[in-house]
Image (cartoon, rainbow, N blue to C red; front, side, top):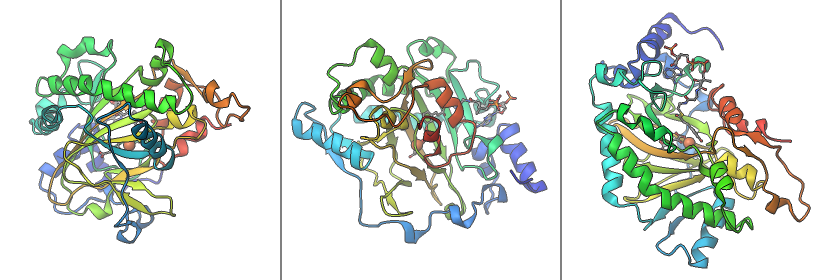
Length: 356
Ligand SMILES: COc1cc(/C=C/C(=O)SCCNC(=O)CCNC(=O)[C@H](O)C(C)(C)COP(=O)(O)OP(=O)(O)OC[C@H]2O[C@@H](n3cnc4c(N)ncnc43)[C@H](O)[C@@H]2OP(=O)(O)O)ccc1O
Ligand SMILES: O=C(O)CCC(=O)C(=O)O
Ligand SMILES: [Fe+2]
């Protein structure tokens, strides 16, 4: 990484080492984007590269057992890697409450937020961070996030979680569980897997993570990345976004992007690398990116449905049974996770870790 200029070093210190986050920097009243956040032109999302009339599928899942619904889900997972679901059964008040909880947490004074900053938190199941991997990024991402590990064991440290948002995070996670299970059942049935037993359940959803993402308003969002292009390393991700928009999904045409239109009450579902690997490329983890808003603070709440840390995954035997060659080797999830977090967000490069 090239050396940063002295002003960037000062800002890095304020944002990362002193734990103010990008929220703290925006609160100082900055009117221009500091160099530390300015993307080189080739990394920016240019208006010409946005396809204005395309959208990802929206699937009504009020009847999960309808074969047409199942087919739409599997088709969308294979073609788009991204879709929105409506009538999924997670109550609107639960969705609204967790978004409000995110605003509440990030509205706390510095001293209160800082109790949970990476390195200060009373438990490693909850951490407040900024950007992605600041140690490895020449240009930082315009976001802070409070991350909750949410396996049943992690929930034992619930009393140490921030009181202003912990009930809402747990309620959202608990309500989303049946949607996650249904989605995985449908997607695995599409791969000829008849039943999800305990071992498979651990591999598919053993260590979920819920993030409260906060993208403060940005003086010039076109110069910056809220999140750089990346695919998720999850099996799948359930994402609640607010009504600001700003999430873009890579289209099949070269370097074009589709905006994910916010739909009140909908959940955005995306396939992660792990399910692409398990399906031997039948399902696709598609790159996506986030652009912050010029005038409003944006929040989103992804649930990264991840394998248990020691789960070993690779192409499923059911997928390979007709003699198809595996495209990926078997990998331990914690190794994949560490690899992902050892570098900046970089498209789909993490998948090289598992590719044969
Ligand atoms: C997008 O698709 C996803 C995402 C996810 C998961 C999302 C999450 O948010 S999970 C929670 C955050 N992630 C992690 O914690 C990843 C695990 N972390 C690591 O493995 C390591 O931190 C590391 C990234 C590999 C770096 O390790 P190392 O070089 O040893 O440095 P550390 O000791 O961790 O940190 C040094 C120092 O810096 C502080 N720090 C690190 N990162 C940040 C940050 N982003 N913001 C602020 N501060 C940071 C750290 O606390 C240390 O401070 P000290 O004061 O203790 O020295 C799931 C699935 C998906 O698909
Ligand atoms: O905030 C969003 O809409 C998406 C965030 C995201 O892609 C991620 O954290 O992996
Ligand atoms: Fe993502």
